[in-house]
Amino acid sequence: MRTLTVARRHRDALLLLAGLLALRGTITIGTFLAFATYVATMSNVTRLLSSVVVTAQMTRAAVERVHE
Image (cartoon, rainbow, N blue to C red):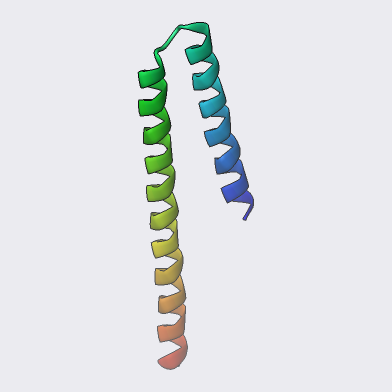
């Protein structure tokens, strides 16, 4: 659970930085929205992949118990 919290903090920090850059005019609102969409997509993909890995590990442990 700690890893998820750290990942959320990093995501939030990136979005905060991008938001500040957009407010200062360093980047456009369109660039900010594209970046925010990218970050959200990557977060979801990472979460899905970690879920698959956990499920695979649990399945492997169950199979090993059956074959004991």
